Length: 393
Image (cartoon, rainbow, N blue to C red; front, side, top):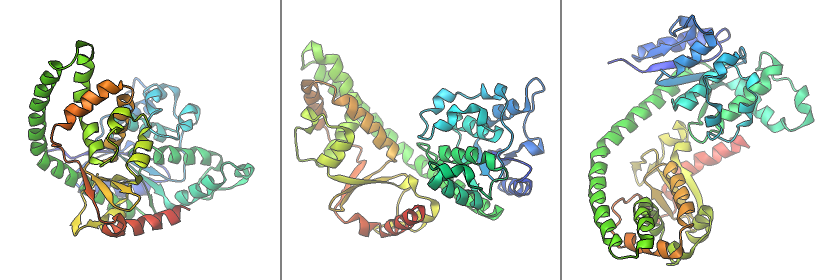
């Protein structure tokens, strides 16, 4: 079986030694490196080399990005047409970078293509560049910024392009982890750990897949029976709306009931925003996403003596008790969208949907309440998180 196709994206001349060491590391793991300086890419003679590089990114399984001291060459206009910039607008917060296409390098465009294609990206930033980026962030809104020299950047006039690209990456909605490095061994160690984590998750998901399928099949049958019962018991004007709602809002209703909100009118009368629902009605003061923690923070975190499954989310109440959500924060974001559409329904329809779904037993069990203080159950996380916050300040 062929190994992973690993696209290594970086400027070449200043990082040639690092790239050659990384190439050996990738090959020793049994994977296939894709590197422009080793003729691993197809250079179509009918188009510019920049365009060929962008086209090759889509065939990769994983992208490793290394940000060093050089900005590199600006990309040619032909290659820019290979990336859908409109689709990238919703990938994060720092999107001003995308509006200045004339200041995008070929390396940066390779990464934008990977983001558009949904390819996992592992980003490594030279520790000196990372330090200067922090200096830039503290001063970028001041007049003095034009007079600051950043020693880590080869050409100071390109510093803003490098630093704003870093901002784009670290402010993405997902896949926004960045790892500072000082030597090639740092990159190798992190990649070895990260790829092992991914393999571990794949095994875990596969193990539970058959169980989840059985649950879904059982629920599907129950929903069909429930749908039939509803359609025969209500007026024709609401039939389609209620039937759709029973299927669409099943998980949302389960989640809200799992929050143990005492006000029974929430599901029929409340029109507060999702954030208000959680903070005001469910008394949630903080949300912790384990995916946002780096490997060093995750390594020693335990819960009741058992290692926590990565990808879970915790909703912390004001009394420090908490709910454990069995999925990542992406599920919570999806539920917030469902709530926004749910509260636009009439109170009558909301009531029928809530009552119908409320009669069913919660089969998913994706939300578990724990009375113990979160700060004690996962004390290791609190310590690491505080340290990280101090460093960022």
